[in-house]
Length: 134
View 1 (cartoon, one colour):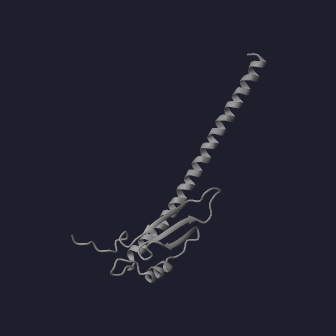
View 2: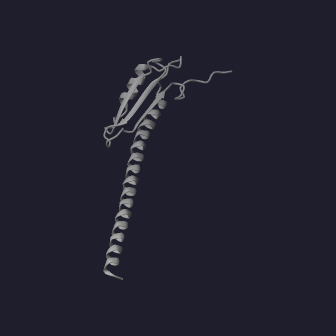
View 3: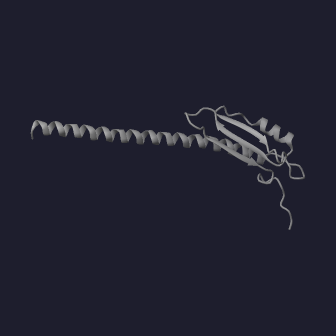
């Protein structure tokens, strides 16, 4: 093998190694990012589940199958805050005592749109309204 062939072989080997290393680095970053996103959404889902369980376990509905606003406010005030999650409860403007929106968003995230969830709670959806006979 001549010196030129050795130099060309070494250059090709170096370039292919660099490209392979870049590929592995990109894959590792993507895996780490995906795991972080999964963890963030899991945190939001856990808060959503805790809120749902609180509303299901509390006596919050009147005989007309409508939320008792004061009872809901006191139940939500008893729920411990999570500093990592921005939480906003808003009564449905179209039906204030029959719908309650929960919006969740992570307080601190990487650049880009933060993970968020939004869900409508209703007395019937929480199982507080008796079934009609029919």
